[in-house]
Image (cartoon, rainbow, N blue to C red; front, side, top):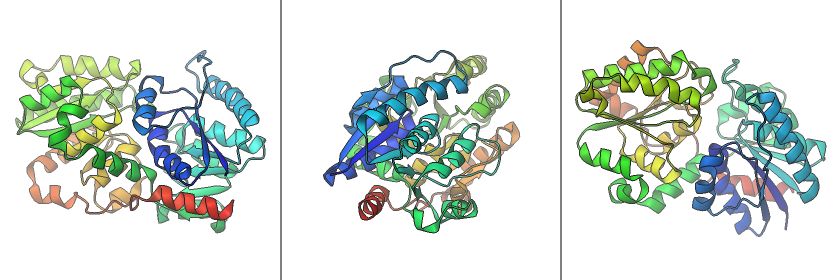
Length: 381
């Protein structure tokens, strides 16, 4: 039996590590889940939903909002946990500060690091700081679990040995399909999976086309996210059959910009927007099943939407998930109001264009990424 330490702190990490956590435990391993605490408000529901702990929590409160303070605080706590637990392998996922700190702590203690979702790159400064986090993790990891052939090529160009790279797909596809199976069809699960306010909103607009909106990235704070809200107003005015659900990120930098723009809309338009608190994962998958398409700056939602055959408008200037764009399932619209309105209107008005963006197969894997990762870890360790 091997001991794996999974270093997790944010909502996407928990979702994407859950399939591997279960796969490794089913094979008789010990998996210690360390929660570093960045997304405290939504983490508990996810841990309960996926039945995965956590076993250890870091409890030191953040002193400031500065990234340097967060990194220092997490490094002190994670380093102590690695020292105490002495895992055989440290598992990190993606590109968050907790992933970077987990990889660095594993390196400091000479513990091999397995990087899940390795090799994503934009080649630009953005997203900040995630682009540099994942590049730094690549210098520290022993195993690089790349979701696609393109991410493998990124790692090879950076000098990572081919023998340390495995193309396995993305575990978020595993998680989305597992959740979809657990929930059943969207129509039968809406009352159970959705918060009452969203359920009532959708019930009041049963035949209208739903656009699911999410936006939270640091580079979109301020004017960009205001543009997203303004584009929604224009789309509602131009398309009477459109409704919008926007689970707002809890960060005040998002709320203080979005809420006034939506509140200023005419009452008839405002009634077709549901601004709500962040939703849990079953509700998110239910909304993705129900929506006509999504406008998002979230990487995870790009992947989850691809698993559910929903077109994606990416509210960013670049994406490290080019495979979805290349496959025709997504369009980069940035946060230019005219571009967002034009591309959303195309999906609302042109049935052929809409169907062309409904992918029959996700470019991010076959839904068995966790099994492929466990196979490699078992074979090598």
